[in-house]
Every structure is written in structure tokens, then in C-alpha cells.
Image 1 (cartoon, rainbow, N blue to C red):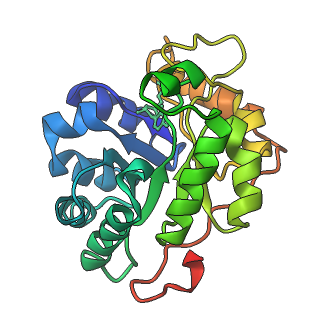
Image 2: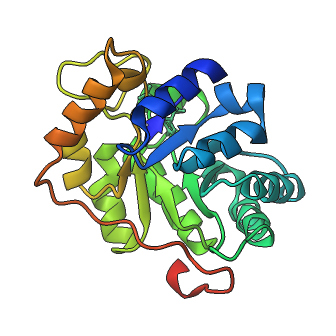
Length: 246
Ligand code: C5P
């Protein structure tokens, strides 16, 4: 999943470059707050599955409306913060369900602990627990609230796969090809490490989007994954099918 954390023209330029090669692009706050639903539609028209990563965290009523609106714009995958509570996560899922089309509903995954946070950052906001313990607590909460999966760092992916079973989406940012700059990410691993530890999807932004040749950077990462066994993403979930959620 290529994170297009840039302005519209550059995002579309990158998307056109990657069309037919990358399956997923990720629209985060930087792009969505500037361009809104139109950018999701434009990326869908280029043939991508679109991950709208707005990390909802508000009262359940507001999150339900936000998820409904983002799903109606064409998002295939949405995020909500696990820290927002089980009720808020369930509301996100309900909102996505209300906008379901014939192809099924947008899937919703819970953000556990941001990959830019380490144990000191957690302590500074009053969470005196190891990162792994906090991720596991939030993953259990998310699973109980009917989430389709979680976002976690590659370091927690193996434990999360064990906990959530083979069908859960385990989406890992904090992924850096060997030798690439970390930027503001604390807990990083290579693409192959992330996949082999249990990620179903990996998210990579700047190592591709800021590379002198983004397509070459993408292809190099894809090549590094050849032969690496990961868990295959399942099909979209039909609007009325809840059997895959637990
Ligand atoms: O440029 P980089 O590869 O660091 O981008 C990572 C992307 O993943 C960003 O869009 C960021 O918002 C997102 N993300 C993250 N950590 C999380 C959840 C999402 O870095 N826990």
C-alpha cells in the first residue's frame, strides 16, 4: 500500500506512475483534508483499491457518520483508533455498513499504537506498559468490536496473527527497505520481515514517494518480496455477512 502523503497533483502523478503495478494506495489526512472525497474517486478511477486512513477518534455518533461518508466516497478500507473504545469502533463498522454497495462494505481496521511511538512516548501520555502489551490489549478490544483487523508495527505482527487468526487484516506501517531513512518512525522493519511475521498488507510512503525514481523504488520492494510467504488478503465482505468478523 503506497501512502500518498503529499498534495493532489503529486499524488495523482505518483498514482499514474504506479497504476497497474501497485494494487492499493493510501490516502491519509494530508491529502484527504485538502481534497476530500474527490481524491478517493479519482484514485478509484485509476483502478486502485483505496485505503482511507483518517484514524477516526471521536464520539460514536460522529465516527459512524464519518465512516459512512468515507465509505460512500469509495473507500475500500478505513481506520479508527482503538483508543476510542469498543463502542466507537462498532459505530465505525456500522457506518461503513450503511454505505455498502453491491461489492460489499468497506472494511474497518483499528489503529493500535502508532509506529512513531515508543515506550517513552507511551509513558509520556500516561500509559505505563510495554508497547506490545498495549497493542495486544487494543487488538483484543478491536476484535471484540467486530473489526476486520488492525494496524500494528511489524514487531507485533506475529503475535497479532496468532491472536486474530488467518483471515484478519494485519496492516503494518513502519516499514523501511534496508538502508532507507527512518524519518519519524520508531519501530521499523524491512518489507520481507513484516510480511513473513504475519502482515497481510504493508504500508510504505516516503521510501517510495520521495525516491528519485518512485517506480524503481516500488519495483525493488516488490522484488524483495518475491518468494516471501505472507497471509493472502481475503475477498471483500458482503454487506450482511458477519461470519468472517470473529
Ligand atoms: O512515509 P512512511 O512510510 O513513514 O508512511 C507511513 C504511513 O503509515 C503514513 O501515512 C502514516 O500515517 C501511516 N501510519 C503509521 N503508523 C500507524 C498507522 C498509520 O505510520 N500506526
